[in-house]
Image 1 (cartoon, one colour):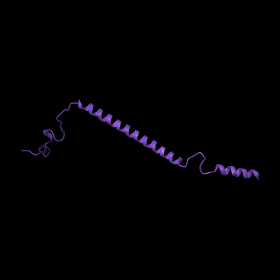
Image 2 (cartoon, one colour):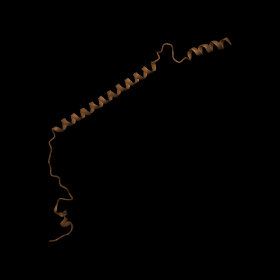
Image 3 (cartoon, helix red, strand yellow):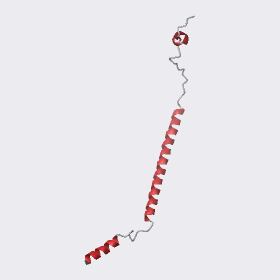
Image 4 (cartoon, one colour):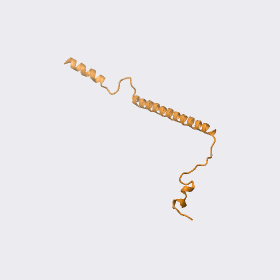
Length: 94
C-alpha cells in the first residue's frame, strides 16, 4: 500500500497545470511570435510580388518603346472588292 501512496503523490506532482519553470503568459508569447513570423512572411511575399510586377512592367515599357508602329491598311474580305458589293449580291442590273 505504501507504493500506491508514493505513486499517487508522484503523479499528482507531475500532473499539475504548468511546469514550475514556465511563466503564465508563455503560450501568449508563443502565439505572438507565431503571428509576428506570419506577418513578416506575408510582407516578404508582397515585396517579392511588387518587385516582379515592377520588373515586368519596366521591362515591357523599355522593350516596346523602340518598336516602330506600322499603319498598314487592312483589307476586309467581306466588304472590299466589287464582287461583294450589295448591287452585285442582289443581281441588280442598270
